[in-house]
Image (cartoon, rainbow, N blue to C red):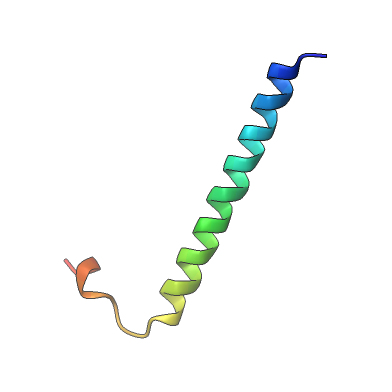
Length: 42
């Protein structure tokens, strides 16, 4: 059994779940804000 391939697979899965979680959190925080944040304003 190739342990390196298994390790890489789990790392990729973890990174994908982490990125999806971060996107959900950022979207949730952005939706809760009624007015845009000054730092994001152009």
